[in-house]
Length: 200
Image (cartoon, rainbow, N blue to C red; front, side):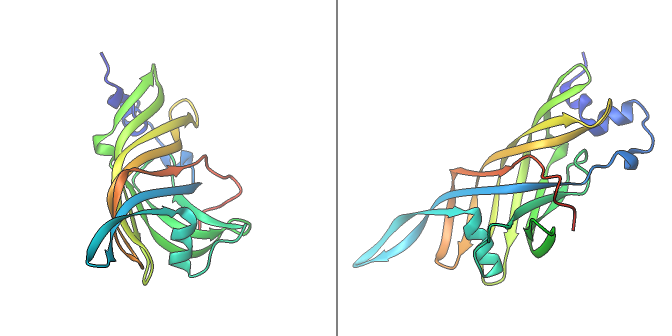
């Protein structure tokens, strides 16, 4: 019986001795939605306490860029090839022009430890470890990870492109207000790719 892992896009291609994989590469730009919930230490008279903190995509954008996002600005994850998950950049961009305002970090997919769900030769979804690393001078710095739920859509008879990614994360964040413990109610989501946005 063939395991779901063997039906992963790259493994399936290798099994069929595919050639010209580069020709099927699909560059995609995914809107990134961040909802962080955590706690940080606050000083109070005669001691300290744990205070709840909420951090959004707009907060990350503003902290890194220096100004809040306008209606045409957003955070995006760029995959040079949506059929080959690995390490991708996280950028603050102007959606109308695809101009990169600032690169703010990376996201890394641990494909070696992914678990795939497939029907026949069709890859439906996978669960895999994922890490988001955001570093902005003088702004927010985050290192969070979790197990992502990745859904796929077919590119052709062989290749499958990541369609959406959702993950509950934990980790650490350094904000101007202080350090934050990111709890497991926090989520990072890659929404469906925006075809109007091109790779930087």
